[in-house]
Length: 108
Image (cartoon, rainbow, N blue to C red):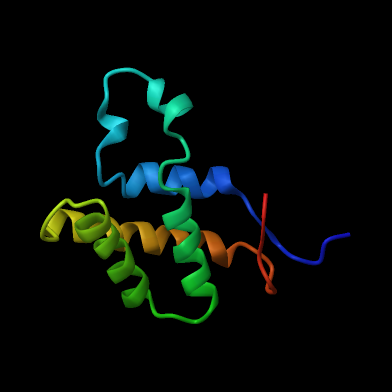
């Protein structure tokens, strides 16, 4: 039996698609993104989980997502809308993490 609470990647993905989606993949007219780009933001969302679990602040996690969009994805200066999306994403991840038992995190 694994003693670690499991993070459901599908749940994190939904948070990312509902709140963040900085490059607008979900705005395409077809549902192709569900098959071809469903994992597009996984590493960033998992990094936010890791940061929060290590005790970094909400503000640090938000700044991380802001930097990913602005610098890593090359989207330019952080807009108010993009910053609000980062805040909403981190808050949703925090709410999700509160539903998990305490202890080290595992993924599935």
